[in-house]
Amino acid sequence: MNESQHGMSRRRMLGALAGVAGAAAVGATGLGTPAIAGNGLLVPTGKRGIILYSVRDRISAAPDATGVPYGFERVLARIAEIGYKEVEFAGYTQHTSILGRQITPEEIRKILDDNGLRANGSHASVPSTVNPTTIAQFEQTLDTAEILGMTHIGTGSDPTGSNYKADWDAAVDRWNTFGEMAAARGLKLYTHNHDAAYDFLRDSGPLDAQGRPTRSSGVRKLEYFIARTNPEWVWFEMDIYWAHVAQHRFRSYTDPDGVTQTSVFDPLAVVAAQPIRFPLFHAKDGTYDPASAAGYAMVPLGEGDIDYGNFFANMGAKGYHNPMWEQDNAPGGATDPGRSLRYAEISYQHMSGLRG
Image (cartoon, rainbow, N blue to C red; front, top):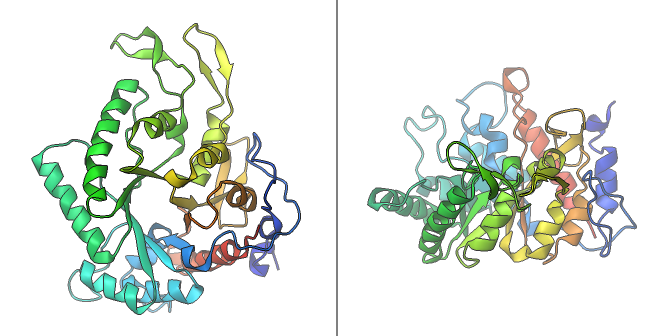
C-alpha cells in the first residue's frame, strides 16, 4: 500500500508536528524544517474551508450511477460530513437536470444552513472598468453574496495582468471604488493571486517603442498594489502554492541602471508584515520540482513539500485567518469520479492536524 492509501505522507506527518512559535521562516526554496510538536490548533475547527472549484466536477455533474455525490445538495452534505465548516464558491450553478431548472442562491443558502456550513467568499467577477453598467452589475454580485451570508467577496484573477505601473495604478483606483461598495454592505472585497502577480513591476528605465518602462525598481506588482489600496476596502487571499511558484520563478530583475539584481520572494514575510490584510488563503500543496517551469506540481494538502505547519504558525494573527483547500487538478474525470471528494478528505485531515 502506498503513502496516499495510508492517508499519511511524510510531509503530512511533518506538517502535523511543525509550526511552533519562533520556527524559522520559509527559506529560499519554500521548504521548512519542523521543530518540536506544538499544542494549539493552527486552523481552528470553524475556519477549515474548501473552495468548490476543487470539486467542480461533482458540483456540475448530472445525476449518475457512480454513487458519488453530485450537485450542491449532495456535495455540500459530503463536505460537511468530512468536517469542513467554510465554503468558497466558484460559481452558483449546477446541472439543470437535478431540479429541472437552475438552482437559486436562496436554495443554496438553505443547503448551507442545513449542513452547518458558512459561505465565506466567492471567486466572482470584479469589473475591469467603472461605469454605471458595471456598478449595477457589481451591486448584483453583492446581492448574491448577502443572500448566501458571506463576509468576503472576491475574484480568482489578479487585479491586472499587466507588468506596468500605469495599469496597476488604474487597478488601485478601480478596486478602491468597488471595495468601498462592498464595505458599505459589511463585505470585504479580496483579490486572489497567481504567480505572475509577484513578478517585478516595470516602473523605471528606458522606455520601449510603446512608451512603457523596461526596468524595475525591485518592487513586486502585488506588493505595490497592497501598499496603495485602502486597507479598509481592499483585502487579499494569498494562494500559497502560487506564491511559492513565484518564489521559484521571479528571483531577479534588471534595475534602472541595467544591472541584474537578485531578490528571492518570501511569501511568509509578506503576510507576517500585515497579517490582517490577508483574511483568506488558498491552502494548495505541491511537490517541489526545480526542473519544472513552475517549480511545483499540485497534490493533495499534506502530500507535498510546502511547509504549512511553519507557514501558519509564523504568519501572525493566529486564529484570524480562513484557509480554503484548493487543488486545481483534483477532479479525476470519468475514470475516477470520486477523486476530488477523496482528495478533499485527505486534505481536511492534514489541515485539522496542523498544530503549533
